[in-house]
Image (cartoon, rainbow, N blue to C red):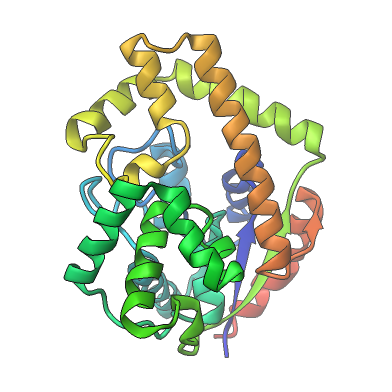
Length: 303
C-alpha cells in the first residue's frame, strides 16, 4: 500500500513554509487538512495560503465550501482521498498538511461506520442544546462515555451528532468501528520550543488583525448570523467573534488581541496533545522533520 506522508504541527508553527521549502526539491501537491480553510472567504483569520503560495505549490481542499454550509469529516475524508489518488495518478507527490486532528485521524483510521444523520433526531438534540446549554448536554455524554466526551472537544456540532446517534442506537459514533483507510500514512509532527511558539502566535495575530481580519469577520456575519444555535461551523473558527467585536467597537484592539492570542495558545496545546495521544506522533524540530520528509518523499516516486 502506498504510504502517504502527513505533515502536522500546531497553529503558527510554519507548516506552509516548510512545505514550500520542500516543493523546491520535489514535485509536491498539498492536500490541506484544516477544518476552516475549506471555506471560501475565510482567508485572513484562517491564515490560508496566499495566492502566491498556492501558485508556487498546488493546494487541494481549499475554498471548497460556502460559509453557509456545514463541512463535515466524512466529506473531508472522501474528498481528501480522491485528491491524493488524483495527485498520484498524475505522477506527482501528495503531502497532507494540516493541524485539524479529527480530519487527520479519519484519514489514518478510516471513516467511522456510523449511521446516516436523522434530521428529526438532530432537531430534537439541537433544541435540547438551545434550552439546556452545552455543559448540560455534554454531561449526558460524559456520564455514559467519558472518552467520547473528551473526543468531542466541546464542539457543539459534534456533541449534537454524538447524542443524535446515541439516542437512536444506544451507541456513540466512536463505538461503531471504522472502514479501512484508502492509504497508509506516516505522520511527521514538529513544533518549536513553547516560548518561541507563543511569540509566533502573538506576532501572527497582530499581522492578521492589521491585515483586515475584523472586516472579514464582518463579512462573515453578513453571510451567517453568529448567534445561531447550534453555532454555525464557520463561526467555530478561532478569533472571528473577537475580530467582529473589534470591528463593531465592543472590544478594544488590545483586548481582542489578548483574547485571540490566549485562545490560540490553548488550541496549540490541544493540537500537540492530539498529535501525541491520538496520532502517535513524536515532536521533532522543523529541520529534522524537513530532513525526514526529504528521505521519505522519493519513495513515492515508484508508484
